[in-house]
Image (tube, rainbow, N blue to C red):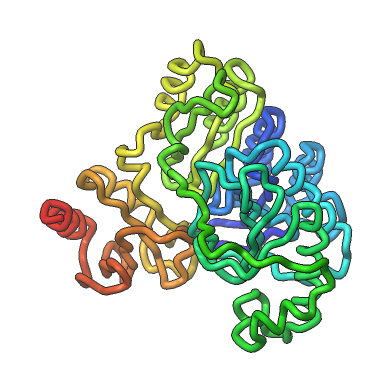
Length: 403
């Protein structure tokens, strides 16, 4: 487990399989963040957790606490091989297939050479799913029972499929893809998009050692997903219990809030919670009689349960307090913007061009050019320059009024 240097101290990422976090593990994370770091916990846009402000001398203690909470890798050197994104609503069968993928990946020492950012998505057509994040490899169910999966490389799941494979062959297929990637990629080709810029996808497929691949029907499209299902209370597929979701403030939780969430899922749900690619949290298995109490508690913790709430519509990177590359304190500026944000506006504040906080498209990006000053970008075009937060809010208000 690596501690990556950052302006505010060491940064440690805890990869959660499918975003799942038990109540006991959540308490352990809260304790580790407090004892070993600054107490700041972030939900990432790949549904993992980050602990900030880690102290160098606390490295061994942190590893011990994480492993005791069953949050570490199953194989030495395999921690970075758990970038498999699932829907927060993934079924037990889909999670089981995802677990088989991860076990196979971690069990193959040769795959430890993959970049920590190499990512996969396993999708079974759930109504709540992140479809816009680019993945190196993605699988999406062709049919309701997920017997066959369409697949694609180097892009978002909304893109065109290259073919299809049977569910029974999914693990073998993915392993063959990863081994072929490592065999063909040069030293500076770390992601699938890098390799496919040089090697045609059809040629790459010819190198795979897998059963015959099938064509994808031209009429196939991944069913629509509704991101609003991550917030508020919604009846689950069993027709009995509800999942209840809430948005963190700019992707951050403190130790007290995470511990309180652990208590909440213990008393009112199934002793587990889920993090999502929208940097939110979702609590499954809430009985109808507990829904209002859970919603009220989430709001009391400062989390937004309504898609219209300002903090449900703002994304911001770590900013200059946590990242040396950032030109502005985007977190502080985002808090100021939240007080001024017009209805329906969605905004991403980025301290530099890397756009770390938003892997998915956001209507408007405020790109920092200096402390407190931003370039306003919409639909990949610069609309205004050198704006203060107040001026940006006024621009957004005029824009939404004319929409």
